[in-house]
Amino acid sequence: MISATIARLIQSPPFPDRLRQSRQVVDSLVGAAKAHAARGNDDDALALVSVAVTVSRRRHTGRFTNAEVEDLLLRLSGRLPASTPLAGAAPLGDEPARDSVLHVMTRCYAAGGHTRLVERWITGRAQVVSSLVLTSPESAEPPATLIEAVQRSGGQVHLLSGTAMGRAGALRALALSSDTVVFAIHENDLVPSLALSAVSDRPPIVIINHADHVFWVGATIADVLVNLRPASADLAVRRRGIPRDRCAVVPLPVSTFDRTMTRDDAKRALGVGVEKKLLVTVGWRYKFTPFAGHDLIAALVPVLADPDVHLIAIGPNEADEPWASAHAHYGSRVRAVGRQADTHTFLEAADVYLDSFPIPSLTATLEAGMFGLPVVGLSLDAPSWPATLTNDDPTLTGHVFADVTEFRERIKHLLSDPVARSSVARSLKLAIDASHGSGEWNAWIDQLRDTVKHSVGPREHPKQRGADRTGPEDVILATHLADSEDRLVRHELRFSPSLVDGGSEYLDIINAGLKRLDSLLLGSAAPRSPEYAAALRISRSMSPWRLQARAMRTALAGTVR
Image 1 (cartoon, rainbow, N blue to C red):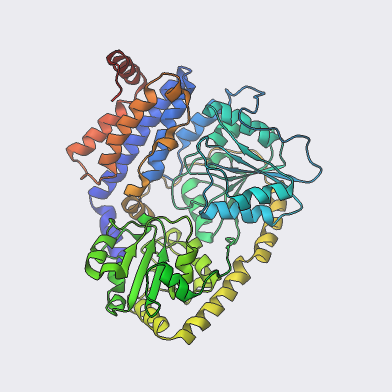
Image 2 (cartoon, rainbow, N blue to C red):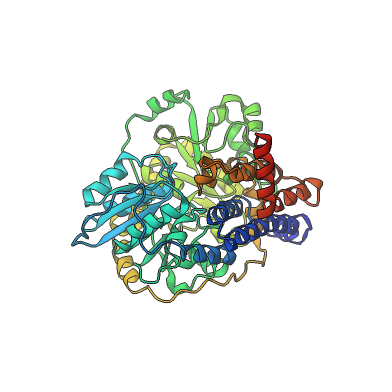
């Protein structure tokens, strides 16, 4: 039983050691950031706290919010000038007569659930002037369809540049020119909190909880937290301390597209014989990482025994397990193709869509169903598996199985019976459209607008209730977020370009240390090992005086390690 396995992991020494070690690294980084802030070194403080929150997101600490980080951002927000020029952004111009909404994103991607969500929000409210601001100076230009949606509404797209403090000042000015601000930001984006934490007379702030199962920054500035499923709201109340009356639950807006080629042509494009039966699954790499002896390939062994069955996974790479072993065993019939900017051809080629496992991918699964594919999912021991890590959407009832034998039999039945595939796909699409289609979504957003108008009031830092209480979600997240895909990368740490371009070596030293720290933490070094001790020493080496000393030494040596 999964529940018994989780119980053993919670009680065994490695698991609490792993959480405690990750938390010590984060606490050390936050302590160093606070020391820099106390000395007025705001850029250095932001660089360090950005590392801390990125580690918190990438390596689960047992916390879903961090009051010390929120307090530090509040303090730094209060240091922003009362009036800051819009560095890197064009002004909105005269205030429009219609309601205006400022959508804030960190980065835009050609493919990505929250990018599509923002686009659906804008296109569904034609009576509102909607503008978009991207807080990361390294963001790619938004997809053409999103830019067109903003322009049709009468709004503008703003790409911020400069230091974190400069971008925060620009965002503050843009926000104060709007009636409502909607955040669909990356979990470690400090700029929105930095911009608005210390502002009392401001428009209502809505945060879209699109990364509901991991740590993120900004809980203290949310007037309304938009959750895309009930389990998200429950976790926000239990583990983030956000009041229940500030949590709204709305349907997930599901995008669809028209078929551009026949199934046979799509199979040919992917190198799959038209007579073969194709299973397709989509999800982030960590969602397929085996847990407690369970993985998708193992569950599919009887299905893959049929030599005519092929499986393509979008998200994991061919070197990842269990995909590498599966490819070695089944050859080209099982392929992991990594991230794909466009999944359309894969869905057009599929006979049956499989949800990712052991952690599901709700958006991808609903979109596959909306496209017209039969969907099959597996969720073992649902009562003890955390609801946040399951597909709890009612439209998937009857399509997700708790019993692996039933899961296999449903797949075999659908693969062997085209009439059944068509019937199941048609009924599922109708159900998804009724719950998540444009009409239902627009009605919820109109209702949310009235909720937001009456939600601004005194805000207190959420109490970290349950932050130190380990449970099933912590065990699973601590296991699955240790993923090489989620390594810390430089663009996530560039909150202060002056640290790179202005001659200071601080950020280079931090990145060098984090490169070593990353290889130790995300390489699954054994708890209580010398490697863990080394990781702690690395984090402590980022204290202010040590950074200054190392910067001076490396400058004299003419090199930065």
